[in-house]
Image (cartoon, rainbow, N blue to C red; front, side):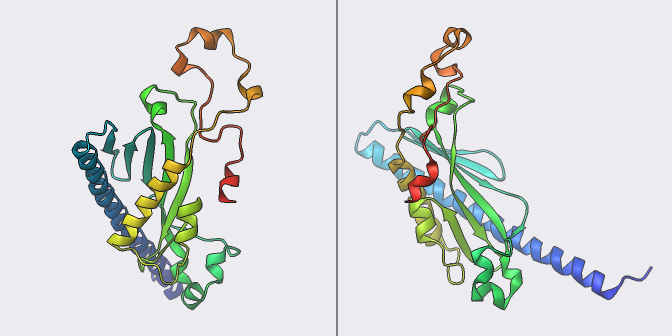
Length: 224
């Protein structure tokens, strides 16, 4: 059977593009892993030399995930294995960079989540985490970030921003800075005033009461 030229070109071109995007994203993720590990080591050395009793830990969680723990927070970096394109209405699609070559709109993604360290230490499965940023990387190693405050405001120039060691370090530092400033607030009284007998019989850290940094508050307000 002879393949139609248009069909063959479509399938092979799209598959080749997505493979390039995936590899660019995976290389970027490995750079994040390496840089984060080195940064956490620097924190460990600083804490040791200054005799500061604060834990800094790095943990691999597989090929597409790793975590860092510092003070009372955990950041989890996760790479999605699929390649995505933006909707037609997304701002990225309106940039000259993408209009010049629509293939540039295909991106891999790396997500950054923030959790409370105690949520994992005490197995509080009902606690909440927040995605504080997601990094989009295309086949040319250009990137931009959707995220909160430091992350979202500093890294949104898709046409010129390219992944480098310095860029990755700045993103990680910004994520740690935002997380450190993103404090745990007490939830509204009415949301925690009731507790069941079953919950009260459980140990405190395993009760069904949910803990999150902005429980009961609109997290979106942090961008204002």
